[in-house]
Amino acid sequence: MDIRIIDPTKKPTHSEKEKMVDFLFEHLDEFGDQKKDILKAIDYSLNECTSFGGFVVVQEENNELIGATVINQTGMGGYIPENILVYIAIHKDHRGKGLGKSLMQKAIEVSEGDIALHVEAGNPAKFLYEKLGFTNPYLEMRLKK
Image (tube, rainbow, N blue to C red; front, side):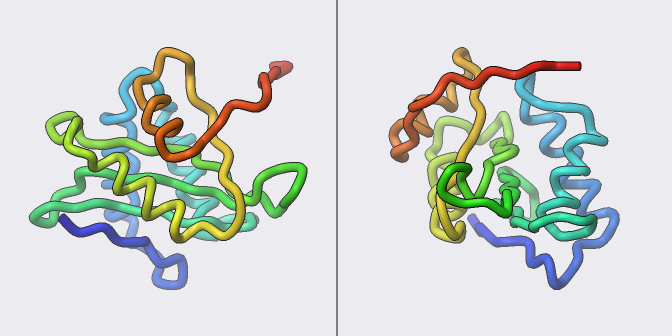
């Protein structure tokens, strides 16, 4: 299995981005977003819009996408972590094999600074994040307009 970072200086083709969006949309299950929002996060991470950048890490087997994560840089540090994990998904047929862990370890290795993430209480990935050292020091509150 090949883990690679999508290089923002070598912009992925439209079809490569579409493949990533479709993969995340399908394999995020009930924890995902609309395709247009997934595309926005990928564009942000690859500096294809006004942003602080970030990166995408993909995992492939026989040229088939089996895992992906999107990290966006916040442009902050200290009071707000430098990075936010926006999405991570493993292909439904490949779960339970440690692929999510290896994908996250690569993202942690490549990230400069701290990483924040949002995870719903019922999401089984919460246990992976805790094993990797993520803690829950705050209660997040949001005002939706």
